[in-house]
Image (cartoon, each protein chain N blue to C red):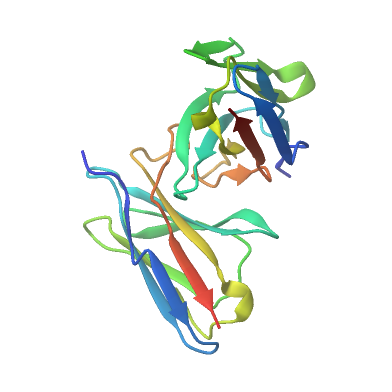
Length: 118
Length: 114
């Protein structure tokens, strides 16, 4: 079974604070992909990052960074020096390649609503 | 490069009616997936099409169906609408045959069933 848990339903911070969004996943597959998406009020999901299960390197992209730890099945997302424009709902997702067919069935967490106040 | 286009953006239907939603993927993308988003259930996978074939299906009743055309455009249909079908329906396209790529989402169709 595949499952993604985002325990933080809502987080509120003041601009310029750092904030970490937690993501814990479950899967029996050895090959899988983890994603983070941002959903602004307009509704579309904006892709932020993809990580495969064989690449545990952390990644930094500007103010965003991701910490992937297979030992704890976690893929946490940190925003440094948050800005009001970061306010959105953030989703963590898991996609496992199920043999014999590959598919794009992503399992999403419940999402974390981040509010950044000026 | 145009993004994923979903039409219509908003729709109001009456219980018992049927509805068809459309999704045009990014040019060159052959995989189209559909998701339902509700406050109670979150984002749930409906089905995925690749080269006009349904490759995978989520746990939804048979009232939910879809198809994909030779130009990769996809439609989903919901028959005998129920109040609980009110949701944001999101379509995602990706370029490769496997899950080894990111999916790009459209802005969704917000369906309200009254």
